[in-house]
Length: 106
Figure 1 (cartoon, helix red, strand yellow):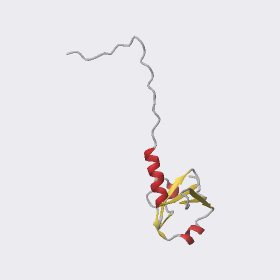
Figure 2 (cartoon, helix red, strand yellow):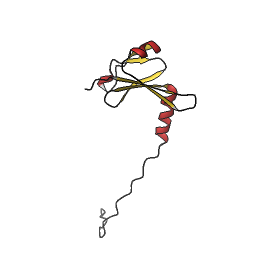
Figure 3 (cartoon, one colour):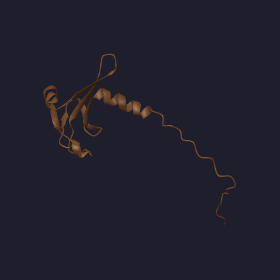
Figure 4 (spheres, one colour):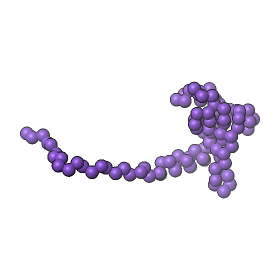
């Protein structure tokens, strides 16, 4: 299991763009946000025991060594964008010529 050594905070700027800040430790986050608990149910075992902060969604994994936290607004926006994304249409391979459909006869 890789050691998590980057802590990423994603917020929104006044113009609507995303602001991403990376920190090498949890120390600056502990001073800026109020810890309300610890993660104890993540499927990524490296996140278990990580702090949960008031006003942030997370922790969530991003790559092997990054722990990501997002504001609620960013989380909601990115989730909506993800939900609206159209899946690529797959084309079916043409049926082999000369094939017959076999059905059950009664």
